Length: 511
View 1 (cartoon, helix red, strand yellow):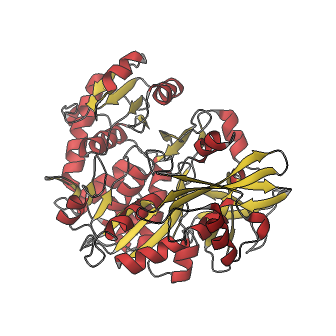
View 2 (cartoon, rainbow, N blue to C red):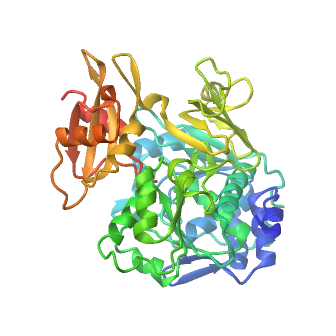
């Protein structure tokens, strides 16, 4: 991290970070969308006016304001306006509907709710009224406005809880994750430091701004003083025009995004998909090593992948100057200040290279959950967050994830890693994507089922072919799948497009 970025990273609050960056490079762009440009100076000036408008509506420091808005310049302005006021904001993914939104509004006790009106054919205002939301206001292209002279001083304490993010619930209700300005700045600093970016880069936001990645990424822009292109709706090949028009150098988001870019590249293998692109980066679900090699070989760009979650937006990140082996097979290293402890079943730390549960401690870790009981369960006696992820740390400090405690298949008493089988199946030329799950079985306890998303135009897959491939890769016999399901598309969430394995278990448990 350069000296300027390092100094900015010490900002106590997000608003302090905005004003310090605006003072350094007021005329440089920060957000690009279609034909619109917002500079760092305009971000500070316009956000203050929006803050004054919100103040006139009754929003005060500590007021809980929920918002469910797409990835737009206006959304960023509203979010930073709330940060200027010191309000508590609860971003809600715009694809969520009555059940999830109603839960978030009730649990957060939101006093105001910002919505986009009718967006992508769905009336969010009508839903908000149906749910009995308080303080409903539309904030798609017109934002509250006022005279900044009426505003109280900006917040000075960056350690107060001012953010409530929501985990994407599976079979149960989502959890409200509590963050501070400092935890978000720490997460963004980790990302910025690892990627070795400069003021000459152009980034991109193809994910929902309401995701924890929104502030994570924006902090990086503020630290290094470069812009990002915002995509309100991301779909390939339509979005390619925006990447090319603005000369994006850094793209990505998650494993699914890498796969989508690679699929587009394969349509015209002799022509670089995005001429200016030099780096794909992201986090979310672990990436298969073969995907890394395919991207580097076929797209001619570097790929760095990291490890993060709603509770800790950035834990580790691959660096562009890492070895190919580390970039392909690990999640990168943690930054200074992030402690990773790998523990055995008894909760004690295990040596390097030994698999165990991943636990985390550091400034980027959340303060817990809205529900105090959930907070008590989530942290151990030493203050480490218990993630439920499995992995080990190499002598070099790189983290290798090997699965989740809930994603271990127990067949005839033997533990089987779903991720190990998935990584091997990704090497099969007919496999576009794959999810391996355990299904209830009277004789075995659980049986191994591979659910495959076939690559377009590839020959039909059979269980015999899958087993033969895995045998050739050296997989132990007791880990071989006993069931194969081929689908057109794996079920995914709407944020970072993670595969929803619980839906697959529901679908195939009775087959």
